[in-house]
Image (cartoon, rainbow, N blue to C red; front, side):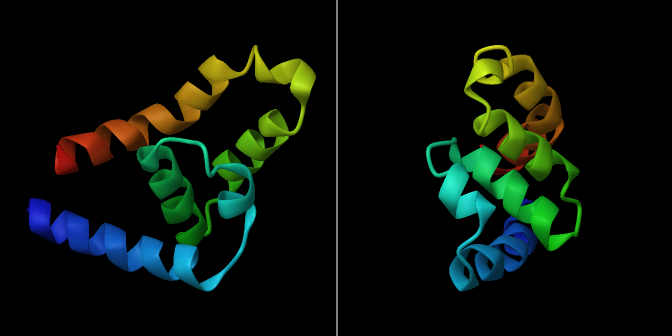
Length: 87
């Protein structure tokens, strides 16, 4: 199961990360690997709401300090699943 999950994640993430220079690479390169993987998977699946929200937060200095809980709310469900599969 873990091997299959890793293969699926790599299949979704690698083309997105390797073949394009996008919001993910430009704005989230300092984020933990789980967060980058989640964003890449969201993009591969066409679900960009989380990406757009985090992009807005990252580009608004006044909101950045107050945005930790918002980012955690977006990322936590995915990052927990990724951590569980790859721990």
